[in-house]
Length: 300
Image 1 (cartoon, rainbow, N blue to C red):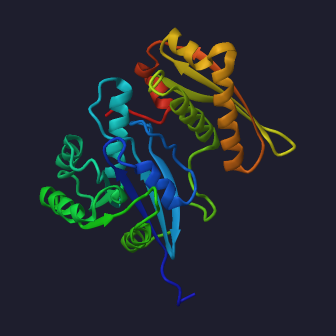
Image 2 (cartoon, rainbow, N blue to C red):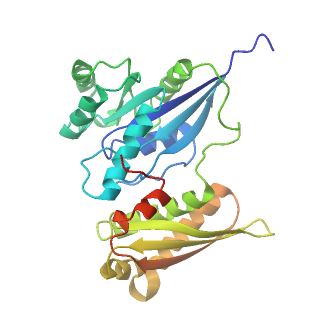
């Protein structure tokens, strides 16, 4: 036993503007799907932890909502969750879309990060999409605005540059016992996973028609003797028109949303899932405190 390296455990807050590729990065690092990925901004609504094992280190990735200017109570709660995720971590990793560069949104985040006492790391993501000669000047410009302890150039989509990031995160993790069982990839409960996968299909299949005016809650999760599970989810929308769009002509769209979500959930959990969806209109759901708490969000 004396020859074994001491165990380490570190929390990494992953921050960035919407669409920086934070969720794609978490999924690529974990090697499995633990956060939903969509081309739409503001996909992640609450902090999701993915757990990585790198040598003697356990690295807990805290994926936060993209930071943007909040308008509704839901927005304010999402932004508060992002900042809390950064402050509670051992390392704050700012993910920047290298192609988009240092946008106003990124600069605003960097301004606020000046106040944090957590070590700051920079990850320039999507580096495969820009000429190599532009990378060093971009990294230099970012570090001139806010000195970062580490800078990484990677492509989460192509899984490039991730080995060095994982190794450095393992090095930076403080000594201490592991927080999660070895076989636990994510602490996201199955109920939340089901709701998020349904919401991902809504985002993918309705495009701009019902963008962020839908929330999904898993009402029941019933284990069956044959190893399968019956899952009932309710989709809440703000207006009657959105409900009609979601259901589609003779129920075609809601059936397709359910079919794809069921297939993905069954594949992820490696067992049959019987998924049933219900759509309800609930005006102002994104202003309800109780519903925000159900999403795991609190306002500052």
